[in-house]
Image (cartoon, rainbow, N blue to C red; front, side):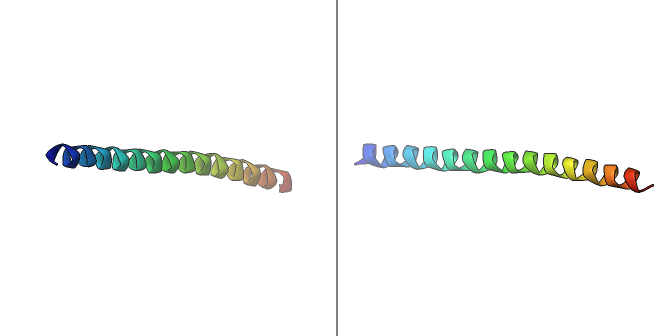
Length: 53
């Protein structure tokens, strides 16, 4: 009984760690793509501003 309890605890810890890492990874990817996107927008904006002058 104690063995099963220990196993389930380890399994739950593993699962929560896995999910946490996955969410963290997705957040990092989102942040990175957001940075790239804003960089592109800034470049586009800068090019349109220089064209208008």
